Length: 153
Image 1 (spheres, helix red, strand yellow):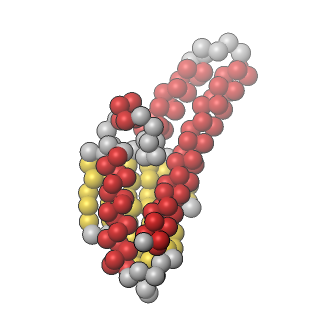
Image 2 (cartoon, helix red, strand yellow):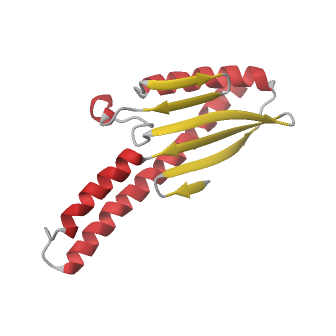
């Protein structure tokens, strides 16, 4: 897993007995269902790739969902020498902008002493870091659940 400050990308090898084409069809069908539940309006579908991006503030009307912190992303299945890999890139631009905006509060001096300003900044960016890393791990967990469901059929 490669963590960029406003994004994350990773690759995972899939263990399955199914042919790559059959696995691709089943995986993409389940992934489409998850993306539709997340209320993404722009979903670009290719045979082995899904690119998606969401509207700003979609988490307000959608409640809590795995994809809420993710502003946009790409998930693709790649076949290499009869092995299947899931590669994904996800970005957290919306949460990054929110963290920047909330960082203005301690910078302009809403908290009196300098130490409290640093503590407020540290808390804001720690929350951002935790949310992005948690989103990445939950996405990988969702992939594992989908893979297990497909293999158990």
